Each structure stands twice: as C-alpha cells, then as structure tokens.
Amino acid sequence: MAKICIYGAGSIGCYIGGRLLAAGSEVDFVGRARMADLLQQQGITLSHYDNRHWFVPPERIDISTQAVKAAAADLVLVTVKSAATPTAAAELASVLRPGAVVVSFQNGVGNAQVLRAALPHHTVLEGMVPFNVVERSPGAFHQGSAGKLEIRQTPALQPFVDDFRNADLPLIQHADMLPVQWAKLLLNLNNAINALSNRPLKEELSQRAYRICLGMAQKEALVLLKLANIRPAKVTPLPATWIPRVLGVPDALFERLGRTMLTIDPLARSSMSDDLAAGRTTEIDWINGEVVRLADHLGRTAPVNERLCELVREAERSDLRPSWSGEALLTQMRAAAGVSSVRHAAR
Image (tube, rainbow, N blue to C red):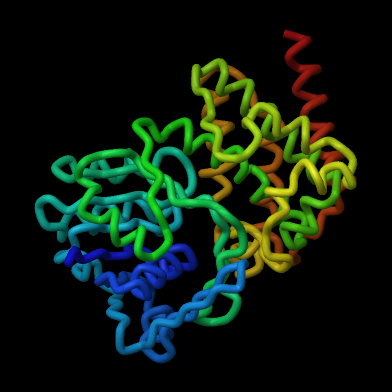
C-alpha cells in the first residue's frame, strides 16, 4: 500500500488526510505541536455540508512535528500556508526518498515552482482544493462547499488515484494547471471581501454591494489575464468571464443564477476571515497580491486588488476586527478604481 504524508496539518490537510485515512489509506501527518497533541488525544472528526460524517480514532493517527516523518512517503501533499512554502521545500529536500511525488494543495499560483526549485529530482505537481474547510471545534473539520480536487496530469500520479477515489475525493487531472489555478484564484478574490465583512460567506454573497466589490476585483484580474494570454478554466457552471456580470444582478435574481455559489454551509467563512479572527497573518499576498504582481509584470496597475490588500494588511495590524458594510467597502473600491482612472488619463 502506498504511504501518503500530509505536510501541514491545518484545516485542509487534516480534512483531506482524514478522509483518506477513513477510507483505509495509510496516511502520516506533519504539523504543529498543538495539532499533534490534539489529534493524538481525540482523533479527527469530519463532516460534509450534505450531512455525511466520518471519525478517525486517535490510535490510527500518526503525526509528528518533524519533517522526517515524510521520509518514507510515496506521496506528499503540501498544505501549509503559502508563506511557509520555502521552509517546507527546504525541509522536504533534506528527507524525501527518491521517486516521491509532491503535490502543492495551496492557494496562489506559484507555490509548486518554489517546491520544484528545491526538489529538482522529484515530481512536483500543482494541485487545487476548490472547497472550503473550517475547523468548527478543536479536531473537527467541516467541508462547507462543493468541489473536486484538481491536479496536474502525470503517469506518476496513477498509483495514488484509487486512494482518492475510495475516499470519494476523486482527482480531476489536467494537462495544464495554470488556467485552473487562475480560475480558482478569481473565486478566492472574495476571501478578502469576506474577511473584511466579518460575515459568513453565504450571508456576504447574498448582498449585492459585496458581490459588486468581488466583480470589480475579478474584472480587473480578467483584463490582466487576457493581456497575459491566460484563459481561466471553466471550474463553475458559468465561464469565468460571465461571473462578474452575474454578481451585479439584484439579490433575488442572484439567488437563482448564482445558486452554486450559495451552495455553502450557512456558518462557513473564508480561511482569510478565520486567520484574522485568530490573529494570524493572512494569505492576501498570494491571492489578491498575485493580481497586483501580474499587473506589475505587465506594466499595468490593479488598484481594486491593491486596495483590498491594503485593507487586509491594516486589519492584520489592528487590535479591533473590522466589519465593513457592503456599501462602505464598495465606496472604497470605486474610489480606488476612480483614482487609478484619473492617473491613467493624466499620463
């Protein structure tokens, strides 16, 4: 049986690893001491928004705080926050056995390249987790939205396909993952808006003003992607280019047209919102910041996404959690876009 290692026992890592364990796969974890102590005491409790539940008892959980736990793995799933990728890459480079396959199941579009640079003799794959996972209580992880795991296609993946299929987490394989990653990132631009709103995702997306903010951020990114000759993959029922238009329709109409986006647990929030609540540094630089970097690379600007980055960084530094109303946040976005338009016209 193939041995799988989850490098990064956070919400995503524990959920995917727990589902694999519950289905009979051999899975080890590398994580922080808090999580190691917790899982070894009470196991992993898993739930799904469709009311399915799983439990993995503590005696079946093998978790360590040391990267050497990955030394025997055939497949390593990297699920750490993007800021920790260079550290993960260096630690894995010192312990991985020859032939091990590494998958980046992380936000952003560049983490696999960081891992690949440190692991030139290993197969490193881009992956994407489209669904939301929250830790509802210590050791209890809940999938709050729909989606299937996406990954770059390669023959090296074949020995592990059945593990994911048996766990009802089938791998959707793609010859080119960049369009898929950007399609996910376009949706993830809402993470900052959700964090600033301090509301559950479903409640936030049910309000037109917040959706217009998201549409503005997406339109800005789509213009840049077109200039970069990157066509986002279709990962939702609607093509990526249609979504900003749909986001702006009245609330009652959006309930019908955007039903898939609202198919989410009523209490679920974005991981960025959870990070702000816990006083952690967010992944804003690897989500909206990716759009800003693409703009800079193209000699353009991305004022809406840049302003969202600024507001989230301000929230990280603040002792008080912001709770922006939709109208107040929309005023900020329109001001940022308007100032940029004036500057552009003056050139």
